[in-house]
Image (cartoon, rainbow, N blue to C red):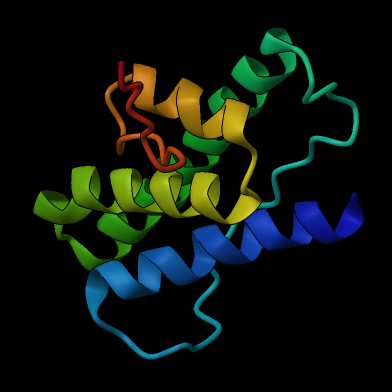
Length: 116
């Protein structure tokens, strides 16, 4: 679970860099999101993790916007950071939850069609 926690922190850090178009440097725009205490097999755990991811993204992107005085990229930064973190964590329940809240569409398996 420590690997997953570190993964989310690096996702938020790299996503804010990508939003600016900068290279991968250590600029201090990162937040660690801990979720070892959550049961990700339950909806309540998924909801709590999503709130933590979004809060971390907002803090990182806000600090970046303040430092660089670029407020227009804040919403894009937050959305990209959340979407990237959700995708890399790769939990279907988390992806579905994010999609329900208006994020990127959940990835689904191939559709099947029944024939008579």
